[in-house]
Image 1 (spheres, rainbow, N blue to C red):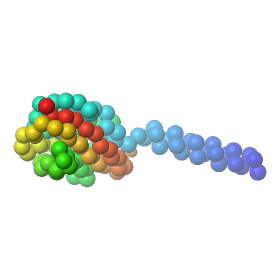
Image 2: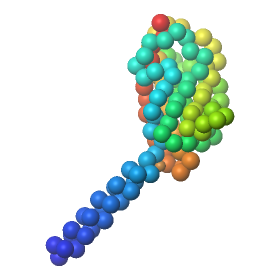
Image 3: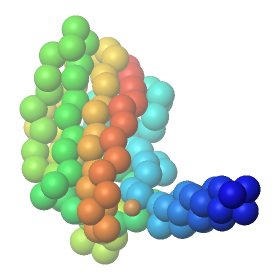
Length: 120
Ligand SMILES: [Cu+2]
């Protein structure tokens, strides 16, 4: 009995390791930078650890007071499917902004997160 339990535990451990080996699209770098202070940006640029599907990925932006900021359609960079670019339609007034992102990677896994930046 103990042997069986150990075998099950071992295979579960292997499954976890295998899942991490095929990591999902994690946010590696953002422009504006996470927690950064910038002049009014013209786009949000998110660099993921693997390619993402722009049609199924969503980015939204809220500004001071929680007001939604209109954004253009998300697209991946022509030379790099791991970079998602979202145009910002109008200049941002100074204050704190929150980016909410949901990404579907090319392996169909979903990831999401939020981060803030400040417009000076
Ligand atoms: Cu994945």
